[in-house]
Amino acid sequence: MVALIACLATVVAGLLVLNFAPTEKKIETQLTRLYDTDDPQFRRSLGVLLGPPLVEGNKVEVLLNGDQIFPAMLKAIREAKKTITFETYIYWSETIGKEFADALAERARAGVKVHLMLDYIGSIKMDDASMKALRDAGVEVHRYHKPVWWKLARLNNRTHRKLLIVDGQIGFTGGVGIADKWRGHGQDEDHWRDTHFRVEGPVVGQMQAVFNDNWTKATGKVLDGEAYFPALAAKGDSPAQMFSSSITGGGESMHLMYLMAITAARHTIHLSNSYFVPDELAVKALVAAAKRGVEVRIITPGKIIDSDVVRAASHERWGALLKAGVKMAEYQPTMYHVKALVVDSLLVSVGSTNFDNRSFSLNDEANLNVLDPVFAKQQEAVFEQDWLRAKPISLQQWEDRPLHDKAAGKLADLIGSQL
Ligand SMILES: O=P(O)(O)OC[C@H](O)CO
Image (cartoon, rainbow, N blue to C red; front, top):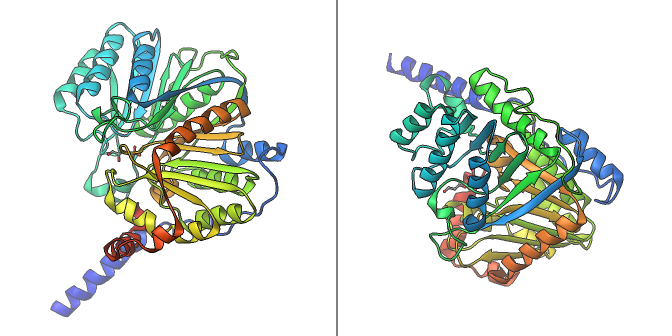
């Protein structure tokens, strides 16, 4: 009898594992290098393969750290006249969370339609009183993918997107979360280094469409009309596109974008990422770029990081990169939470995406691609400033790292697909 129960339990467990396993293939083979980044085909392929095409006439402003990011976001919220749509992963009840909640509630009471999409896990540290105050003021709050026992598989699919759109006219995206560790200017380990972007122009319509994606999936409602999608005049000179990924659609888009950009690179790759755990294909693409003469530089967090496991898994994957000549450096003053890619002083990709499997395959992400040499040069200057505060790690230093670091790397690597 016991043997029969054990047998049945094994079959049920096996079936469960099979049912939770991904059913569709991911990108498995290295991309063929068909064009450089300045070839019109690169722009065309970004448009057709990632979703909406790049549209002209955008203005994208860089905001460095909480001191610049939060006032710009709060100003836009406080000046909203018709609609606010806001989707974020981390939202905690702290001083900055309260400032946002107060501003959102005030606008809702004034008649602005306010839609707030919070990831359930990311907003777990938001207190009930703040949530109630928002709802009482008329803010429509939805918490994405509440864990329930009958939908366990989706526990691992969070919305990691970071989008704020005001009146369908001003958009924000980048790395920032709504928590006090993003306040300040990266001055110490309690104040993180991050970059966010303020966007105006036709691409804001694409940002709103990405917000609508999860809003509709979660609430069954569509946000449409002039208050959400007004006619958008040109505000600047940057061609841009906003695209998204989710396991429920376009699941490989982020992975693909990084592989396309790295594969098309001819001169330089400047990659900043808070969680850098490249898969085999990404390593191959970066190695191939370095071997064909592309200068590849990557900044990741150093000892000050909120996830030692991620840093250990990251180190484990550096060997082939360093051997190929990729320059790695770890940011020293504080946690480095920036997520930005600049290729050939032309393409800039920014948004919520980390350089790891969780962002490439498990979570919902959204990135803004900007194809503009002026903007790209500006972001390279930001990268250079960060590089000055980062400690380069040579191949020799990497090989000589302590045995316990190597062991931690091997262990962390075992769960690399979940990081
Ligand atoms: O997942 P991210 O990149 O938004 O970062 C969030 C931090 O891990 C919160 O501690």
